[in-house]
Image 1: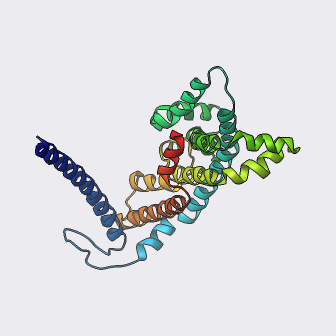
Image 2: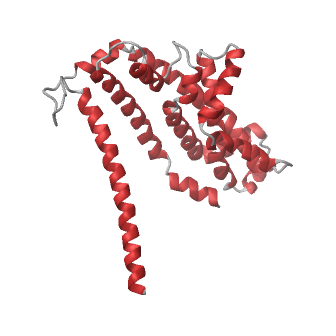
Image 3: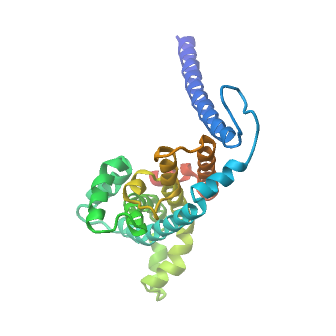
Length: 276
């Protein structure tokens, strides 16, 4: 009986590792195919391209105006990160330190934009923004992206705030610190790791957000992921290699920020803090 349990445990572990390995192998194969195509002169029906070149990157940079797209992307991401922090951190402090009727309902409402697929609330949100003449502009894209990012900052920051002893705040007030000085000189240094973690993850999330940006962006407010979509599906004939080069630029941009984010935050630490 014991041997049967050990055998079933080993088989289950093998099946899990096999599925994980199969998924990673397919993922790496797709990425390798895109990267290889972006450097290929011609690649038709062979294991490797007929030749190698970097001209598709310069062609994509000129054809898709990547310098403008990247500039707009960084502008939108910066504004989303800034306003998410300015709104989310004080709101997280209020929710962590105050008890009031309906608090659980408020927390549930904050969870909804993170649990529900963005397309489900993105269409009515875009409709409202168009009626207010905000959609199609950078402000509309920023407002749309704030809907999921502000709750995300709040949910990440609440565990960081709750682990700070309230006696520290009480002692600061005894020594004459007002609310502003308390936040700047006491809370902000203690919360800085959590704030950096939340904002860096918001940055990566905003770069990769397609649905809300696609529904609210105009010709001059497209982020890189939306511009990539139009490059693939818009009318006209485009070289596959130049589109793949644009995709590589998007992957590298996202990967760089993701690596930076992971240097400041460990996702398991956030989960561990949330359980305290």
